[in-house]
Length: 488
Image (tube, rainbow, N blue to C red; front, side):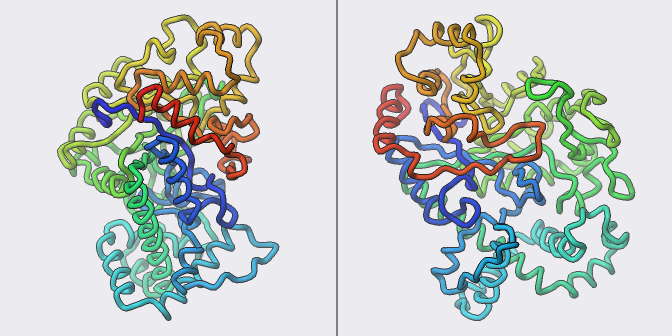
């Protein structure tokens, strides 16, 4: 179990939601300031969303790689401080992400001219140490750029199908671009490890998120087609999703190709072991998103228009987790066990002693047996007021009927405080080993500040906070609550 007998509190805030930076939060000074805020508040866990490079929709759950870091999270100020970058003027027609990428190209040129020999050697060592995934990723990204950001199944056949001669010619032709992509990854991981070291100095632990599935248009599916349900042309034969649920009447059609589990099992789940190794390099704890997919996946035909056409297909979760534990011994994992959870899913989670999740916004429907109600919580769990997929607690509360609000008030003992604090207190008072609070709730923000609305593609992943929203007494107030509920 990840926290043993220690009770802890944490805040959920993605890197892009930090203040500062150009267009989005990044790994610069504001990330360090946030760690100081957490430490001063007695909050010692910082949870972020997946860190991989995203597609145009910005979703961190559909990344271009399961190993690489998102270059738009790189601190440009860090590059300036080392003398590798002079910020150019921003063209009014360029997006912030395009501007950031242009700055990274300039920084690469500055690095080549002004970096020390030791720093250049560190870059070469990084590329060599991570060649098992970086070689494919950097070539994939260079080709994607060459072909106008088209997905790999639309590339010329020889490159789509990874014919050795075509790959060799591409590596020669695109060497400069590949080298610049390797540089970006070197800088991302260097900045991340510096931030992680600073967090440890302040007793803050970093809590990451690993999507169970992989984006169809990604370096991994292109490079390891044998592990995924795609046909000879690269088209997905079956894809992942979930049946109709709380978020959508027609279910959720995610579009990720499913795994060829038999092929993965034949080589001892080597692909998964390599993936987990990267996660453990980044984080102290890792949440497995859609953990129930390790027991059974909702398989949908690749041609389907909604998730309603799917059915459950068994997955070898016990064999996979056994292989991971054999490789790493102790694994600091949390199982996201929301949605359609069967006794078999619970048995798999309990078999490996993994904490599950309790969402308080789900607690007040039904009767007193609702598993999300605090009196039904178990120590081996992580309690949230809400997640990145939920409305803020104020937004959720505003949408309820007066009768529902009355029920919540009666359950919580008719608190005198205004929402969201009664729900925050309920999370902190829970027996769950870890209580996680979205930053929006800590800042008392309404539904206009929601991070993501499942089933939609517009307007998500863009929320950011400002330090002006942090009231002067917030750290002391949080620290008092953390101590009151023995989570210090």
